[in-house]
Amino acid sequence: MKSITHVYPLRKTSQAWKIPLVIIHICDESCLYKISQEIINDEFYLITQENPDFKNGKCTYFGKKIFSPIRLKFFDIKNSSIENNLLYRPDEIVIPDARFNVIVNYPLRNPVQISMFAPSEKGFTRASLIDSLQKIYDFIYREEERTATPTIYEYREICSDCTNKDKKKFLKKRKIEGEICSICYNSGKYGVDLPCGHNFHKKCILSWLNENNTCPLCRKYVIQCKSCNGLGFISRVEQNVVIPPEYRGVFRNTTDGIFGIWGYDFEDLYLEELFYNRKRKILQIFIRSHCNNMQ
Image (tube, rainbow, N blue to C red; front, side, top):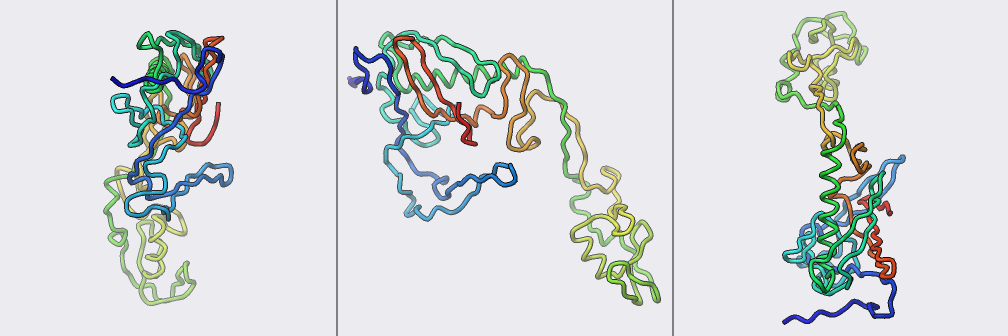
């Protein structure tokens, strides 16, 4: 039978202690790259570069114990894994009490205090504690979506009818002898008419159309399309509580449900630190997002 040891400084005289979050690193494809964070013009960017320390399928952290934030949503208690990494000493008792409270305040506008009940009379192991916190956050996000007001948002969708259309097919060749091209300001013998009626040298207008779909003079669209009127995209209006990531950028839209979640999805949250106060029976949790915000 596997022996269970307590985490230092878990002693009868201890009133509070930090619960270490340690993983055993196992390399995967993500180790091929190094991600740095930069803020440019008040916008947050993740910069990806090749990892020079990745050799023979391993990085410098392979198999090592690392104090690391745990991406809460992706913890799997069945094998104590977090996105291919393993939790160190998952069966170690870290809180010997059967019941205590935890205050969840990030990323919530309306913090909530929740009672936690241990899965066994011995208390919480490191794995069962993380699993319970995962379930709490899963419940919070589901209830928030159930109780929040739907948001109406607009997004642009590439027009499939225009995707493969060749702009050259909308140009008509004609003589322009004596006329001046409005792009190069030179005269020529032949040119092309755009659907709007304006005429240019073929070479000049094709260079322009490589970057644009409009006439350089009147700005009317060159490609004629009934679906998008030549815009190249179709505007759609949808209604949902949480705007899908592909239509809202980096941050989750703030919702007005029972908890009032702002800024971040469940998968953005990392469990950074855990502190337990046995005298008060309070578990203090520190959560950060991928943007390094702490609460």
